[in-house]
Length: 195
Image (cartoon, rainbow, N blue to C red; front, side, top):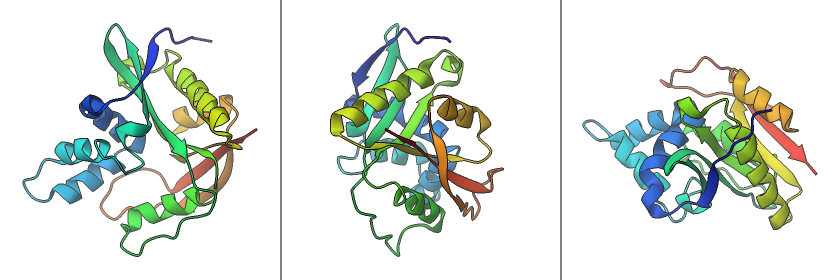
């Protein structure tokens, strides 16, 4: 087993530029699609992404992020936090693409939710994913969460192997809503790891 030999630190607002592409990697293209919609014609979707990651209130905020570093460079990140104990109502204004994801999140109340686990492509296969999941385990234990949860597409076989090796099992699935977002998958999968 390859062990990650870098370091971890809590993210700051200054990390937004590094976090936005990592959010995009983890979302399998969905984040950039949505940021493009928000940016509108002639707008910069990456600026929208940086703004979203800079938020003080969104789940995808830098406030919930852990940065993995090596040789002074950002190599990857984990964005995770505890879900509420009760399912949250789904707002009727929520984009249809996000409804299945929120439905799945509602199926894992109280768990420590791994929203983003990503590494830059050249850092993959170096043990970073497992190391980030171990950090998520530590955070979940410190928060008294009954386990972890995350959502992955049915076609992301590499990520699914990583999660299954680390004790995650499929708990539910929902059909993807794509609109004009291009993705080879059919379903989103809720994976959980219970203690």
